[in-house]
Each structure stands twice: as structure tokens, then as C-alpha cells.
Length: 206
Image (cartoon, rainbow, N blue to C red; front, side):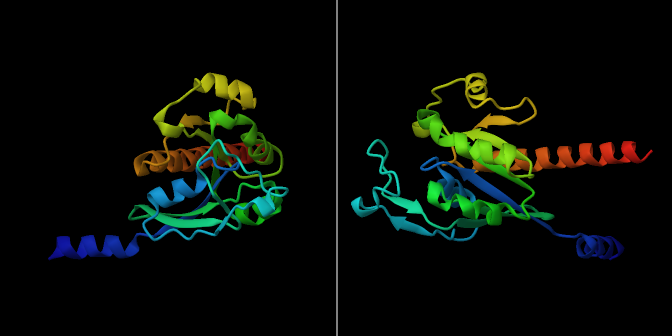
């Protein structure tokens, strides 16, 4: 009985922590796929059909099998363990929706920037945003479409001119395990960055 009571008390005293993570990137890099792959609830999608009538606003790319585009955000939730729940917010990729990113990023502990090396130029704006206009910790994740990684990570880092302290990984976001690894990389990076900032602040006050 005492052992059961101790265990129950420990469970009741354990505080559940939640965190917001943003999944960003250009058009068609796999943001919606990533959220849907790992979300333990039916992912909320705000997608709209792309038509020829919108061709002057939204880029229609015949090179990829994509006929819809996110017009607000994707939303999902995943429980990492009994002490951490992550809420996932996928950004819209079309340029006309970029002003929404500030609102989606607000309050996030970190962000994953997805990259498609077949259309690397579509990632420049997202990388630039998190490097210059946002304050959240972020990582870059190369999504190897069709399971094929066409470029070495070192070449991707050079092409995107990523600073050395920004984590760069490769993960097929169709696989929930890969998405989980990317999310944990963000959490670890955010935790490490917070520790560094706290240490720097303490030293400055000394």
C-alpha cells in the first residue's frame, strides 16, 4: 500500500508541460504531411484547391503532384511522454500568406524549417525569416522526396548559408518516427539555447 500511495502521489505531482512548435517552409515542402503523419488527433487542415484562376497569385507547379494549398494553417498534437505535449502549427507556404507567420510563431518554443532540395530556392524566404525576423530557436530539416536524398547535408548548409549553430537534419516526414526525431531536435536545440542565454545573463550580472 505505501508503494502504491507513493507512486500515485508522484503521478499527481508530475506537471504536464505543453509547448508550441511551428513547422514552416516554402510551397509544397511537406508541412501538411508532417503534421498529419504524427498528430494523435485528426489534423486540422485549411487547404483550398488551386485553380487556373489563381495562377497570377499562387504558383502552379506542374512538376509536383499538388493540387491544394494551405490558406491558414495546419494544426496537430502529439504527446511525447507523460510530461510533454507538443502542439504543431504548420504555416502556409504561399508568399501572400507570409504576413500570418508572425502570429503563428508567437509563443512557440521553436520551429522546423522544411526544405526540398529539388526546389531549394523555395526555402530561402523561410530561412531568411527565421534568421532575421523571428526570435525562436529553429532547425532545418531536409525532406527527401520519394525517399531519395539528392544532396549531402554539407552542400545544403552551404547553399542556404546556414550558420554553424543551426541544426541541420534529413528526415522523410511521411514517417512519424522521423517527424518525432525532428521535433525532439527542436526541443533539444531550444533547451540548449535557453541554457546558454541564462548562463550569459548570469555572467553579465556578476
